Length: 204
Figure 1 (cartoon, rainbow, N blue to C red):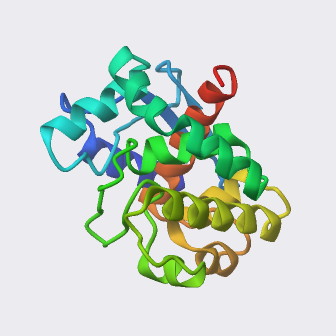
Figure 2: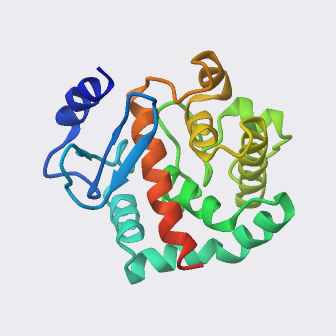
Figure 3: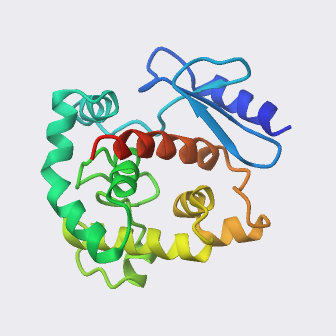
């Protein structure tokens, strides 16, 4: 049933404008599986929502592909991310993965739901962690890293659940029996971040 639901959702999204080739599925236990190859039973995930303009789209695609333009966008914040990762005791590779998926390293990124900055903080999360300027990269990074750290602790270092909660809120994960909620966006988001995390772990 879950796979059927994902198939209908992803079929609607898939097309020539897809931003990155990522294939995967979520099994009956809510566990995501991903690959960069079109394996049997795996469905094509589309990068969604797309960046706000063509320039941002080019940057996000470059980061995902690991090109020099993507490296340049990432390197602007590498030192700052490393500092925050040490302060908050969060893996720097994980922060890079979340930022790549959330904002493509665009500190002025804003989602349709109002999430803002590098870590795409909501107003509620920003207030919870004492952010005074949500557009300030250091404040945004610190709050996002603290939230991610707290989610990892809340879910006993279960990265799948922590990432699902970062996307959908911890209440949604808890309310669905400590499992990835049956939200199409969240079930695409988790394997996308995991893919980026694996890539950064071998590069940083």
